[in-house]
Length: 633
Image 1: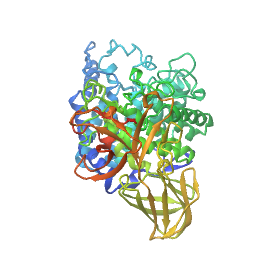
Image 2: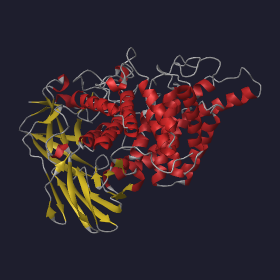
Image 3: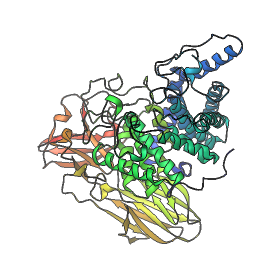
Image 4: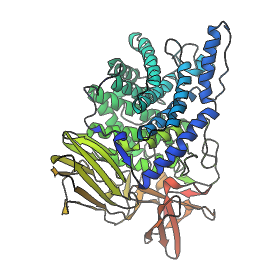
């Protein structure tokens, strides 16, 4: 069954669906169009070319031939990892989000074909895991046990794969109304319930994500068993297990960000979903403490997390090496977690981190052309090292290809972060040239943003209710606009530049109040009303906390939400060795001819001038040395 509406309990602050908001121009329009026209078809084709989709065909063939009497027939899995199924599911999810915004008959037909192949690979009882199905007599990989599920706490990824499938199934159903993939998901979830719910098998997923997938199934069906399963998986964790995948303590007792960063952030996001849907405040308390730990001690200035290549993990407190790992998937999962923390609390500090990660640590994961990717995202590079899973510089794909399709789905649904509502409040979270429609205080309201953000701090938001209505518009005032680059002491500004912003409604200046990071404007709104914001966007000098050894004696530069780096494409110098005096002057230059159109920072130090570019745009001109943190004189 499919539920008619949302469950009774959910996030106190409700996001406005990405389908109700359109980017109409500017920065994010360009990124979404490249994603739609290049990255989506590229990712789907890579899934075909690398054999990921073929795995489903081989699994289906094995079942057919065995059913026909070939009792020993099986296929040796042709791809590299048992989690390769998940890349197909993420690519479908991202493509479904694209279809939600702009229907495309050819893309839809292509997805229908892939979904039919997935459905054919599902075993009669609902089990779907191609590596076991195509090679059933013995494990096709050392990560797989002879019995289902038994090695999932380690590395089989059985539950991880279907968690991504659940997200894809819901996305495709909501985009097209077609149930084929959703029905595969529901059949799978029935099996999971029989084994883990009724069957009382207690295994903690080795790679979290199914918790979020089950929450989505619960929202679309109203079947409480799926929510119960999400909680069962979370609560299977406990003392004596591995911290690598956050099994070392009960989830409600965890207070620090530890272990594999993608697994961790997916779990924290899943905990937020369960907390919202069940009202369990223990989960909220735990993830609040963990978030404090991450943002106060373990986050890069780019908003990336997961400093260590070993274990793709969070490091110790203040362990933030410049050549840190910073997986693209970890940044994307960090965005998901931060958004959910905002929905739980209504506090803009979570959106400040989300914005920083979106513009920097996550966006750097895909090239401007849309077909080259970073797995790690360090803040220094020597121009030669093969640090990108065996590649020097951006790569077209990876053996472990989790990051590219993750970028696809994130960019396609980005507008889901723009607005939210709670009662008679409308939250404006994200600034971008866009238009949308929301319902607040029972009134439909059209919103039109006009801005060149992040290159310019001027934002005009036309607020047009269908009839005059009193409600509160809450405009996020970014921390960087009020003197705090991040909502902790991990990074601070090392200059005397004054931050600031101004706001007007109907020509009248508005100065407050600012509540939890939002400028609250309560009035009777009428068609023709508009808010005008102006954020000062000087170049700011950033320093790291004194306990971060890697940034000692160094500074970074940012403007608005964008972090900058120096990249020497002529390879005449080592950017990390550049010394910037405190007396250096800065000039910003709008360069439509450079990197798809960016604003650069010209650092003038005596007679020398150094050009800094946005960090997200590095390594789009070939391999070259790069550094975010420069030496301070």
